[in-house]
Length: 277
Image (cartoon, rainbow, N blue to C red; front, side, top):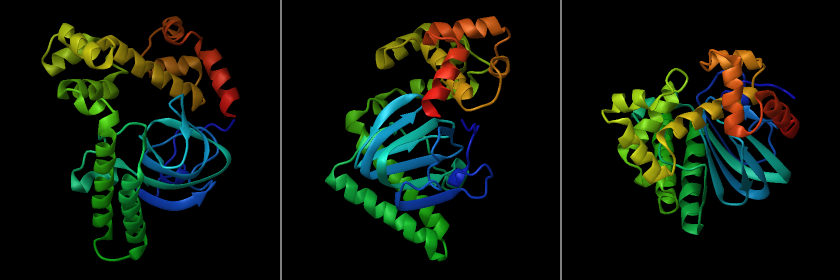
């Protein structure tokens, strides 16, 4: 199976742009490559016609009309298309959005099913972004950034009734953000609690109340996810992956992964390669 550690805008191995939009494409390999891969950018996929499964970070989600998927950088994903799939795709980097000081990581879930009214709003935004992308008019890039930000805010608002992310305390959101940035070097709740000015017990109270998990489980889950990503989409050996993720002993690395997943790293790699080849 083809191994790709990460792809840039347009699914190229070389970064040559920070933004791209394609509307109403059908099974276009220049928009979505036919194998599992990791992005270095954000992507919004709006399904119009067709079916299949969208595998995102090893979880399967049904693809169906008027379902909108939100993919973040570093996530591994793959579209298993059944026959023909018609969709629109918007891709952009975090750097592209920096000039408007917009936080891309809004509380948007993996997917949202949109109704008739929501579809009309998204359709307008996609069309405006697409027209600006080819207009070559003054300030078109500034307008595109603004419209993407409006789309993200709209998706966040659409998700609020069905998602509990919008009610998470700020402290818990910061905890998850810190884990994402530091989990390779820091895997103790004490470190994060100290940085946030609270005690580990209070952090546990928050995570159990709002997420149903211990504070340590969140760290371990992020670690396991990164191990899975590297096992699937890199040519590193098991030992190299363990070293890169801060494990000093290969035996401990293997025990940790087996305890969390029920299989050895090599067995997981073999099964995923067979599934996604």
